[in-house]
Each structure stands twice: as structure tokens, then as C-alpha cells.
Length: 256
Image (cartoon, rainbow, N blue to C red; front, top):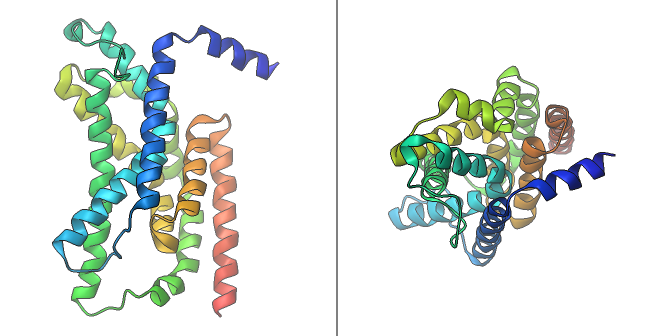
């Protein structure tokens, strides 16, 4: 019965939804290929070029990981922009697959995550500046506690509230809607902040155990997609948290 309902829903979607999904999906695949061929510098190098390269690859990695789960939200923004009286000149995806409003929304969203990556790099560089070690061995030592913290965060009310906002595009638009091109960009940044609050612990875990490791990126992107899109996302989020706790405790017992 559930399979039939999903099939019926897919048949009722307009062509624009598939075009937009295909566009974001293609960008996501392209980003995976770029990350696979890139050589990301280790965080902690006090070098401007290394910072720019790290931030660029991190931003591309966020596109790869976040875009599949972003499709419902971007499509809702595109449709709402077309129906808004102030934005009649903006259109639903045509040849490019992304309207002006949705394009600005996406760019602002990615910008927030890119800033998060730059902040992480600068934080690690700050540790180097004051003389603390940031070697692989030190990161390995912190992997267990980091996994435990990520697992605990999955059970917090803050995480669950942020996840519910990420899972409900219409609720976000009703409470945060802004008109015009500038409004679309502001909404993208706003939604990026919501997702940051929801997923920052997962990103911290990814950075701790292996920044831009393709297998780990794949695992984390699946987790993010399932949390946001699949029914019973809150329950799945807690199961993921239990998994992180188990891994963290195992790592701690191995070290000790």
C-alpha cells in the first residue's frame, strides 16, 4: 500500500520537479567527482592558499552531501516564488533546471556551510599557533570522545527541534518567507543555519575521523538524507546516535 502511495505521488509531480531534481542530482555527482580527484590540505597549516583550497573543497563536499536532501526545499522555494505577486518575473526551472530564486537560495545555503569549513580550519590553525599538536595521532585520540559527543547530541531536544524544521519545508516558508531575490538569498542563509544546527555534530564527527574521506562522506550523506527525507526521521536520528555512542565507547576501550 505504501509503495502504491509513493508511486501515485511521483506520477502527480510536475515535470519541473524532475528537472530540478535531476539538476541538483547532477551537481551533486559532479561534486563527488571533484572531491574524489582533489587533494585537501590538512587543517592546521598556517597558509592562505591552503585555507582557500580547504574551504573550496569543503564547500564542494557540502554540495555533494547536502544537495540530495535539499531537493524538496528548493522545489518548494521555486514554486512559492513563482506564485508570489512580487516575483512574477521569476520562473520555475526551465532549461537550466533552477530558477533565479532557487539559485540564490542554493548559493546562500552553500555559503553558510563553506563558512563553517573555514571556521574549522581557522580554529585548528589557532591550536597550532598556541603550540598544541594537531597530528593524526592526536585526532585519533579524540575520535572516541568525539563520537560519543555526536551520539549524545542526536538525543538532545535542540537537535530534534532543528531536525523537525529541516524536515518541514512549508513550515519554514510560512514562518521565514521573504520576497524578492534578496529575500531568496536570505532564506537560503537562514535555512543553512537551521541545517548547521541540525548537522554540525555529524560534520564534527566527519572532520575528526577523516575530512573528505569519500567512504565516510558517503555514510554521512546517507545519514543526513535519511534523517531529513525518510519517514520516522526522528527515530532514525536516535538510532544513528546510538550507533555513534557504540563506536565511541568501543574506540575509548580500545585506546585505554
